[in-house]
Every structure is written in structure tokens, then in C-alpha cells.
Amino acid sequence: MTSFEVVDPTTTAAWAALEAQASRIRASSLTELFARDPGRVEALSVEAAGIYLDLSKNLLDQAILRDLIELARQTGVEERRDEMFAGARVNVSEDRRVLHVALRIPADDELVIDDHDVARDVHAVLDQMGRFADAVRSGAWRGATGERISHIINVGIGGSSLGPAMAARALRRFSDAEIEARFVSNVDAANLEAAISGLEPATTLVIVSSKTFTTLETMTNARLLRDWVTHSLGEASVERHFVAVSTNLEAVASFGIDPANSFAFWDFIGGRYSMDSAIGLSTMLLIGPERFGQLLAGFHEVDEHFLSAPIEANLPILLGLLRIWYSVFLGAETLGVMPYAEDLERLPAYLQQLQMESNGKRVDQRGRPVSYPTGPIVWGEPGTNGQHSFFQLLHQGTHLIPIDLIGVLMPLSDEQASHDLLIANLLAQAEALAFGRSAEAVAASGVPADQVPFRSFPGNRPSTLILLDELNPRGLGALVALYEHDVFTQGAVLGIDSFDQWGVELGKSLATALAADITAPELSAGHDESTTRALERYRALRRQWA
Image (cartoon, rainbow, N blue to C red; front, side, top):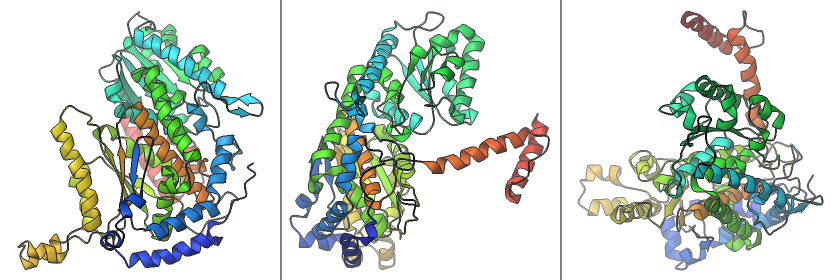
């Protein structure tokens, strides 16, 4: 257990002050806030690790920010952070350490826990991954027929798929091997059929990512892929076409994979925090060990910033406090994430898991029900596509929806004019959301009077501008670490366990029982009437199809 005592945030003086501040800010507007404070942008902007964070278009001022910072201090965010980095068991419900930060410690550093250097273990696996990646990329590792590997299929679910899939898309320009990666996660076999379409088993390598090697969806897909490979190449081919990311070496060997080709990660790494562990093997195969090292360096740079920067200039803490301000004190239920970079297309889906699986909790660390919201509903789509989809609601709807607008300053293509237009759209959306266009201004532009209400924009819609210098491996690592520690900050302030995910388990256990009922001679008792009727309907149609 941790030595740090969890503070009920509602009992702090800062909480009470923020409740009063919320009433005040509702009566104000971003137009007024900018007019009253000429130094607002400078005071509410911070920069570190190649990331520029502008909070000025949010519904707060320097007084509110001071109270939020005081809330962080009164709830012990810095102490909780230090405990996590030191290896304390901050995952209290599972009595586990939380050490994803150990995955990016430089090779010449140490992290000694119980007289054992965790960093040495991490780098032993990284070295193993590097040797394997070099062998596949160079053609030294070949399939059962002697052909080079041209395609990777990563089989996993949740963090074992979302992170690698997001990274493959984000870093496609840095993929210098003649290898394509595809990702299978859904137990719906249509996902697998699409992934193998056009592929040859002889040139395909399958990475099975499951810590326990028992995850139902992952192992179902892995067995189907095993049948696909062995039907074409024979049983002996499994050793050349399958590797594992797992710690269950017995199950790995039983599947037919040489345990020497199994890459470890540890129970102090949650799936949604694992893209920079062996779960990132597909990423390393695509971009190479050196660039994977740059990805880790970006993570580590933000780790060091999070660990050492004062709260007033600490990007992840400020971002986490902003989430709490909106969800707890202003009643916003969702958070939009809008990357103005096509290669970050999968980032919103990745952040959905990171945020919602981490902080979607109803009890605090002592198991007591909480009386406040504990995490935003995360959603999003790349710009400019979203502008022609749901931005209408953002501009003229009735909901309070804070959004992150993420821009990449370095173009992702050679079309500079297109990139200029993309950045212009990014900044225009932030400006339009914040300041809108009054009915008076619309009328003055010559719009007919009967159309003025429809073409007026109230403004006062908050956004956070996050500018990344470049979307390269280092930049991606920094961006993901920013969000990881933002999530940590929210959990620390609210006194919840951000690192368990018991909510995932109930549906999985019920699905196992229901799967048996589908093919059983008779339905088992105990299901509700709605479930029973749906099962009976499926069973009846299934008998017709069989």
C-alpha cells in the first residue's frame, strides 16, 4: 500500500473556493476575460518538451488557476506523483506498483525497487526486441518457406491494440522497412478477414499480445490465424510465423511459439500504458530500434518535466486540473479531442481508453462512493473533417463541450499550401468558438433581419490549443506522456484509483456464460427476460443457418 493518505477533495478550502469561482465565471465571457487582462495569453501559456499549451481560450482566469493549483497541493498531487515514480503501490485495489515511467528510463539510469533494478529488466527486453526487429527488417528472419516477412498482423485488444495501431498511423512517414502492419482486435471475425485479405501466410508474421495468453478475444483470433497459417504451411511453420508478447511462457509454448520468441512485460504496466513496452513490438518493426528509442526519449522528457516542473508551469498537471474544472465545477460531461493532423486519426480512440478506463470510477481509493464526476467522456475526429460534421453543435448548440485542438507545426506532407490552410482552420476554429459573432455584427454585415438569429454565434465555447513542433517519434512520445500524466493528475486530485479496470471484467465473465448457452441443448436459468428472449431468437436463427 502507499504511505500517502487520500484526501477527500470536497473537504479542502480550494474546493470551496472553486465552487464560488464557478458562479462568478458563468456570468463572464471569454471576450470580457481577454479585454480585462492584456497579459492573459502569456500568463496562461506554457511550453516544454516541444509542446506549446495555450489555456487562454478556456473559461478561467488567473485567480481560478491559482485556486486549481492550490487544489492540487491540498490533495497531494505532487506527493502522489513522487510515490508513483518511486515504485509505491499506487494501484491500491490490486496492490500493484504503477511503473509505465520505467519503460522509458535511459539505459544508464537505475530504478531500484526492493533491491532490484527494474530498469535493467526493461532494457533487457528492449535489447531482445531490437535484435528481433533488426533480424526481421534485414531479412535475416524469414518465414517457413524462406521468404522475407512483408506483413505483420498484431493480435490484441484494448491497450494491446489501440496504442500500436495509433503509433503505426502516426509514424507512417518513419516506417523505413518494406513491411506493412495490420491490427486485429475485435472478436468479430470480419475484422480478421479484412486483416488477412490479400496476404500470404508465407510472408506474414503474427504478433500475439496477451499478458496472460488467455484473453478471450485475442486468443480466439490467434487460433484462427494459426489455422490460416498451418493450413497453408504445416504445423512446423508456427515457430517462424508467430511470436508472443506475454509472460505465460507455458501457454506460449503450448500454442507452438518458441518461448525464446516471447517478449515480456510486467504486472506493473497497465495495458493502456503499454505502447512503449514490448506491446510496441510492431512499432519497432516498422520504424526500427533507433527511432523506437527516440519515441521513448519523448516519453521520458515529459516524465522528467512532470516530475520536476512547478505546478504553475507543469503541462500535465495544468491539463489535468483543467479537466476537473470543467467536469466537476462547470458541469461539462465530455471532452472533445480534435487533432488537426490526419496521421493522428487514431489518437482520439486511444485517448478514450486512456481517460475513460483510468478515471471512470464511482468509488475513491478507500472504496467509498464519490459525490462528484470522475472523468470526462472522450470523443473526437481529425480536423478539418469534424468541421463539416459535428462542429455545428460546438458553435451553436446548447452543450458546454471543452475541446483540445491539437496542431502539428511541421507539415506532414510536401504540400506547404495545404498545411498552411490546415493551420489556418485550426486557429480559426479556436477563435470562432471563443468569440463567436454577435447578432449586431451579423446584422451590420447586411444579413436579412429574419436570418440574423440563425447566423449569430454566441462564442464563449472553450478550447485548449496544443501545438506540437513535429509529429516524429520523439514528438509522439511526448504527446502521449502529456495525456498519461494528465490522467494521473485527475485521479490524484479526486482520490480515485486510475490504474485498475474492474469495470471491464463483469461483461467478460457474463459473455463466457452466455457463449455456452448459445450452443447448449437448453438455456440455463438466471437470465433476465430481455436477455433470454434475445438468446432464443438468435438460437432459432442459428439453427436455420447451420
